[in-house]
Image (cartoon, rainbow, N blue to C red; front, side, top):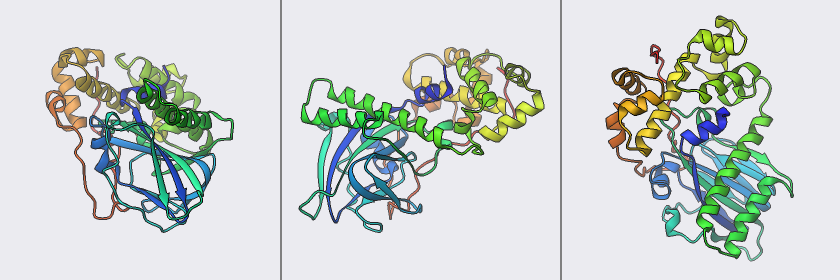
Length: 345
């Protein structure tokens, strides 16, 4: 099991929504902050990932305080932390801040066709995709992604093919379209992340860059393949043929946390997922992530999450949030792992 696939599975990535936008100059399309709409679209999700695939023409994307980003046909821009943003025919333009169009997939006929702008001739076209996922207790992928990034594809590339299939669903609706579009959204995001990983500079240091490092990538794979194993620093270092000190330093430089802290954080993410998605007892879940004692597991869980397992299981889901100026609002980021002492399995 590779670490990226495991993270995408454990944080409950779910895609479902597509908008097919036709724009005529001058125009602007504004997406509210994810905190305001994620509960409307994905009631069980904490974080909203947005992406826009440019199918025709050019446009500009403005995300929070980032400089405007020029987009051309074949580009896909990703806003992984749900920041409010604007796509427009020119930088500085603002669109209508309307949260009512963002609804659960079963309330919409997908993809949703939208026409914007005052002009008579279409100048740009793009497809918007949305995904929901968990940000807490630990999502190392989100933590390693910037506010916004873009990747590019050629005319016969896989990203373009995904978009064409999505648009075909709107022109020739068939039974199961909602499921097809959900999977397409997820596939596009995975492919975009892989392309982004391939473009990272050699000196990049974060969890995502660590996946391609021969030592850290192997260590992450082992941890994700066997999360309940009684890992120690010595065992992990031996797995990747490094000394304890060199491995600990190398791992921390890439991932941002020491190896054993990462093991604990990842175990708590798996446990948090299972607490929400199953009715299994806390003890059963504790055993699955490497704890023989429910008390030790509960202490570790509360230390990272801020609540005991039973309380986490009962907690209300994400509520919409409001912001005076949506472009200035900050979306919630993946929680940083606790820096406390290691709890052995």
